[in-house]
Image 1: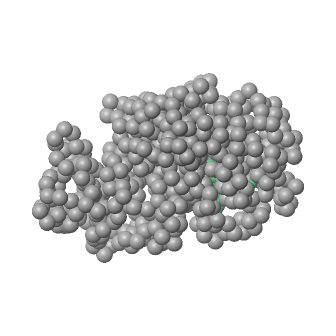
Image 2 (image 1 turned 90 degrees about the vertical axis):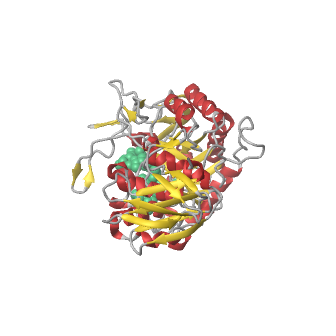
Length: 495
Ligand code: ARE
Ligand code: CA
């Protein structure tokens, strides 16, 4: 449950709101060939269709389940199955965003859903599962409003409603059974694991009972006895009743401090020199239990946690630097974010457009990404995972996998460099002046292609070429005028 069960690579990407058919082709044409290990997909099961004044089909409607039928704006059961098979066939794993803490919030009777089950949120009737009022926590919640009011009270965080969402009682045997059936349906299809949404809001002991009953992975694609990868969404920045540590017995846990601290460092509120013991040394979870990322679908738009310092595609130079650091750094299991664009509308420090869903047509169907000649995406999709500086660092992570960090160098401030065994070397310049240094790269003598400024193509390099001497030392230069503040070479970028 801590092992991602990857075969192709050591990083996964969240293809937020992508249609299943687009993900299937992406696995075959890009993710497989580029060494991505897997994809986190948006919730695939039936949910509420939200139309609320100006708010039309927000991305967050997918976090309000109506049943466990596989039917969403990304596609139906057959589309989903086809994607899982095609991705597994090229070694790319699929991880489902499992929303099992709750069902929908309150909506007037007759509100539509993305499947055929229908529901009545007021009487807590979800006939597609079926769940009825007996299956919810209302009787176990002690707040006046029925909602979570105080994050310092663990029992209300778990037994009351998160922002008005009908809260399932995982203490009930019947509820567990329905959740286990849902997870098993997906596992039997070939899914490799789950992001468990809102894990803070469920009791770790109840979750353990559920996960222990989930089947081993499908042996068409995985070795016998392989367990589903579980990564639990727990936002723990410290100072609350519930900590991420309570969940490490069930699987990995999202380490939200990681992206927050890196955002602060690259924005200049902390010096990169202090990153030399980033991870456990900074009070984060043990690396064997953590899932790390620079931003996620919530905090890239001011939801969730991390605040204004979170780095996103909007500050692309810092974003590429932070992702490069993450992918080069031997801590945690790494996830990349892949976004669509929306126009922000800042009013009193809040983006009034934070609800905007993916690009859609006049019938509200998602318009999936198109692929441009230069490999970037069109139709309003950002596709950070297709940026050269990011996909080449995924390869770096794969090449360096299994080695430790060594030969740390810094200028005492915001220029750093380090090796990964004798497999890779990276330098980062976040200073207001050029980096010009002879540095130990730990690589064997020869010429290497810097995979940030270019690609190794055939026997040559479209970016900077770095000459490593017989002593492993190379002259490294990153000027402030360059597009990117990073330089990276590795054993397989030798030319
Ligand atoms: C929407 C509307 C609400 C409405 C509700 C019910 O925005 O106004 O009341 O629907 O109709 C997402 C959105 C929500 C959205 C929800 C359902 O972010 O805005 O509500 O979908 O459609 C806490 C949780 C954490 C959670 C974050 C967002 O602990 O688990 O809040 N993150 C996950 C997902 C979200 C998703 C949900 C959970 C719900 O990643 O995308 O919500 O399925 C401190 C605490 C954190 C807390 C944070 C924010 O940092 O430590 O624990 O996170 O504040 O409150
Ligand atoms: Ca709960």
